[in-house]
Length: 301
Figure 1 (cartoon, rainbow, N blue to C red):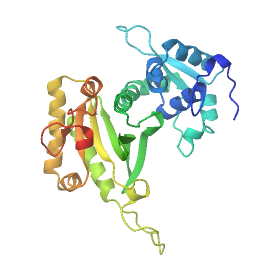
Figure 2 (cartoon, one colour; figure 1 turned 60 degrees about the horizontal axis):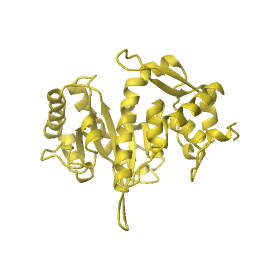
Figure 3 (cartoon, one colour; figure 1 turned 60 degrees about the vertical axis):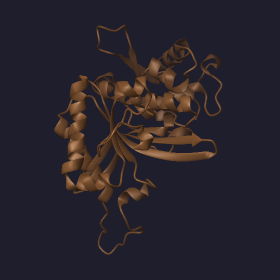
Figure 4 (cartoon, rainbow, N blue to C red; figure 1 turned 135 degrees about the vertical axis):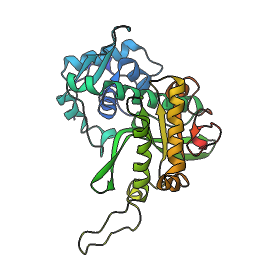
């Protein structure tokens, strides 16, 4: 694939030029602000570097932006790929094997912006913590909107699947997590019901069709994950008291629903406030275990 690029658009990288990385990041994360792209791809770089590159991509017809509808803030552009930009990214190595779900219009971008930008904020909190601690978690270790069948014609759609490698000396521990981002726009009960969907996915086994036998026995999640990912709820968009009530409702679902109780005995479950993980870092004791107990780091749930 050939993507026109001026030498000024390129930055040193062990993998891909910055221009390609921006295209791939927009394909991966759907929408992002200029500041978020800088934090994601060049945390030590300048905002001007990303701004120039994004404006060049827009001039070339590969990207476009919508303006955040918030009169209290200075003008903030949220960037997304055009159809042509989405087409180009299909051949980028970092995106091979990943289904494209691009947002390719201003209308679609405006509808998806609040939730998508909150999910990117969550990813960036983990990425910043990983850099600080010497762990590994980059732009391609966060896959939004991952869907799995859970039976009866229904699907579980996780807001994101996170891959994270804890590095401690010569020891490397690979962790995975389903991440649910809650902006307090749905009822607390509806949020808690999401735990039932995860419990159903944990137990779901595909049924053979006719006389065809399953090649591999066991739950369907083993096709994608060697160990079932922990489930992390990240809450924001309400007062502290209301967020704590929502966490309590998640804990009540674990305690009262037999399917979720059994699930929680096998899989770590936790919830935290987004502003806490941004301020303190997700590796700090800011996560409430949904089985009860004192707050702890997400890696210790």
